[in-house]
Length: 502
Image (cartoon, rainbow, N blue to C red):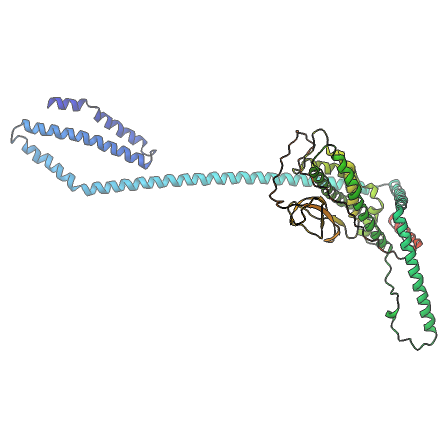
């Protein structure tokens, strides 16, 4: 029995139980619920081992005293203690339930604190992003104010023109008028067509004059057929168009003709030039199509800016029967050579350099087709001066093919419903097709595999896909009929010029 007691006193179980109790006390609020329960179970197991050894020593001690030794001690201390333990089992259960509730409450508090921390972090990130947006808006506002001040300065400088500058502008206006007259005589076909139209109009006017003389003679003499309606006359006189309308109609016909000439001649020249460096015909045609689209975009932007500057310059001194808008358009038409076409060409080349659809060899640049881009920009800029501006239709690869807007190329699949890529844009006037474009149709255009094209890193180059070649067919709209003699047209033009110069 002494050996058993000595082993119990020297055992590490009691020390381990004490150490685990102290560690559990320190880490209770840090551990999770499962960890605390595992530690408690371990402590109960250690405690049960110690209690088993103590009950063994109690048994041996009771036997050493004889049959009736230790009975009073067991009655007075051990048996009441056992009764108290059994009677307080409900209290132990309630203590365990309270402990469990406390653990659950601690877990909920930890979850709530973690959710609050997450919400706080989210609000802080939103606040930071809002501050960044606010700083960006402030920066944009400052830039807008600086641009406004710069515009005011430029406007004030423009309004401070001297008398010599006004005289120089008048001289430039006369020079522009002379140049416009020279340009009218440049095209032999247009000149002959105008002569034929004038002859036809003169013959019609002569016939109307003879009819009017006949009516006048009949009205002076009594006639039984006075009640006949004027509508029975073979000629019905309509209102004669003004000189401005004649100019607009003539420019409309000439610009459509120039657009067709660019398609039939300049486009093929640019295509042959690109074929020296690019073997893929599809890529070449895509480059030309994208260059045409970007040229129209750049020309329209330049026209808006140019029109705004002209309106600001003419509004202080504008006088006359015509509106300010008509005077602005008339000035632009007479001074088309003031258009900075090189700036638009640079913008087009810059836009093509970052276009992801087209590519170009590293040893050359898109400046190679700058002549074609310059001609398209000039035509597009002049088209904006018409009463109903001409513009190209919106086009996207994979769209439904329209017979009213495009023609199919010779290598297209005639039964394919979708456009594989565009070769030439269609020209629109008030959502009506004026000149058809050209496109390549192919089945499965949306699912065709894109060939990845990479080239050497060059800051002035882009990546793209090239269009396919199409047959060139030109459609020329008939020139509008002019009314009035050439002398009357020249007199009206001189009158408009004198009004604009004053």
